[in-house]
Length: 441
Ligand code: AMO
Image (cartoon, rainbow, N blue to C red):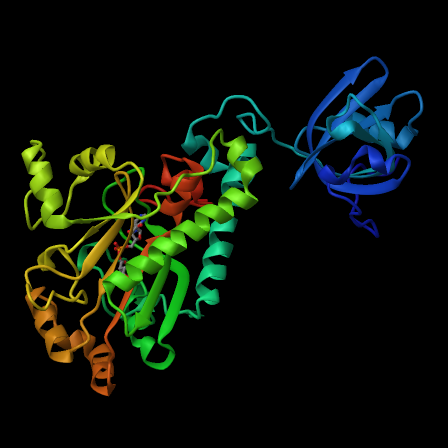
């Protein structure tokens, strides 16, 4: 008897599991995948082979199969990776109405460990346990559905933005200055100089409106978040746009249209995935409400909430707001002091700024605004925020060359996926989440 594990050789897949249907009755096929269950009943061994797309039943008749095939079937353990060459048989009782009777079976890799939790059905164990063997955990039906939705989020965002003439860009992630406040910066030694991981592409995307006018980036952003919450990670994927000759109202319109496009794409392309997650497609208001920050704070204070003008809205306060506005809405015209230096104060009322957050209930999905395009004002704003203009020398220089009025936003890709997939914990929608306690796998 040859050794049990074999290489691929010249075998190549002809079909995925879901393509095995009664119409293929009598056809020879080659399948690859993993064993998700093995069950013997009488003289028949039923092997469920699972691949990227689903399951197919492989039926071995002990009385008819070759000695080699039987030896391999005996050695099989769930999770082993296998290849099957066989013939399709229409079979009403089998999943998809057809099964495969193997002529040859290869074990490509015998599983030596069984996960401590059931991947194929059964109860979902704690997230931490699952994250420890994330590559296996991601085989769960719900994880597959979640990340299919995420793929559609990414592809539909690209389709929308490139369709509207935005150019996709990549900006450095190793940087020399903070953009979103010093507290959440990761330091990295860059050769022998201090540097940081980018918290956002903010300054680069603004500069790039000079040559390209309309840009977007889908890329990593790093935040050294001290608190460990269901909504915060240390590494995220940020969807950023920046555009010349527009203001915050225009980019709110763009963001609203973008969200609507993504929701429709997920509805059209992910109906089965939404079903697996036990939810329907999201309903989206015809027009996202635009609530002014000052009015929101006055209203919340009247309701007895802890909301003080001039401060960011905190967790419990946004929870209350989320109850009143459970879908998508904007909060606009934030106090200038609550927003970063690059956000433009209103010309007629500089205590307020041309800034917005996009919310979904209590969850902040995006923030953005009109930008300061005057160099002298930007220097003033940096100083007001106790930042040193010298540290931004290269960025400020660009403003000497005709920096146009411009505006943009940053949208958290994971948070948007949470909303679409109905997940409460951001880690569920992140392949390998990073937080204060987790740097592996
Ligand atoms: P902001 O800091 O608000 O704005 O970030 C934009 C969006 O990114 C997401 N986000 C996060 N998601 C999970 N974990 C985190 N630690 C985290 N931090 C941010 C949120 C948030 O709304 N430069 C500006 C954007 C702009 O003005 O264009 C910025 O970075 O969904």
